[in-house]
Length: 294
Image 1 (spheres, rainbow, N blue to C red):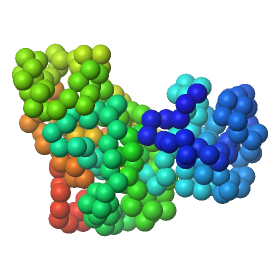
Image 2: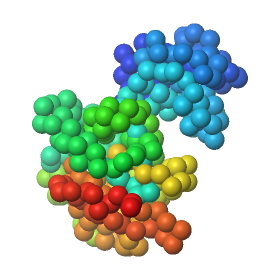
Image 3: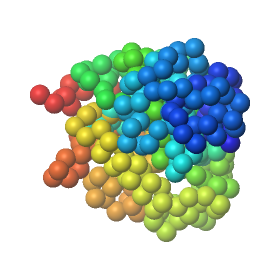
Image 4: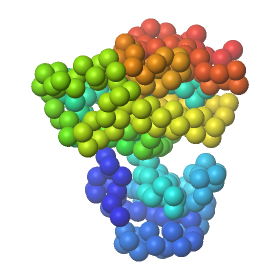
């Protein structure tokens, strides 16, 4: 068993597993960790806390345990999901924040990107300041990729929340196209299909746009249901967010490239009984007070 993508081995040096049962015991043996702790245990000495509880009990277990900044969830169905430090989610309306990638490169889910620079940090801090207008954030979810987790790190620190990693928010799986420059990709005959008929395209050895949109829509739908009536912040990537917006608007997938999503921009979607409403799209500056429910 290996850590979730984007989590370094260094971060797993000190592990506390919370939740008894065969899964917790097996996980402790596999990772060389101490025996599982009971719920409500003090795990502040650990750098990583893994919750081995049913999906329906995650929130209660996370609230009960006294833990440090890293939290994770493990279930028989999903394997190991490590929640990185300072990530959280908030929904209704859903706030999606795209993480940055190198300009001119198709980064994809398998491309490592160094986001540790002063400009990226300043942008992330400014994002946290803009979202300060929200009176309460129920949770923060992030793609497992480091550049996504670091985008919401200042926000999570300011709100005292853990960043919850969700695989369904991952960047596109570009397969053989991962790391390809945009200039080289644009020379390929398939590029016209990517731009004008995305519903018919699959990245060689990777994901199709139809699959990516279905993944995003189902993931967000599940998180909305989990946090009904709350506002959650979700950090993903440009193309996945664009397909989610197309889904919310009822826009054909073949036209999703007309939607623009910039790094660290904010898109808000309200999930209501009557249906979905896009409240703001690709907001890069300005006051968000109008999004607050009165």
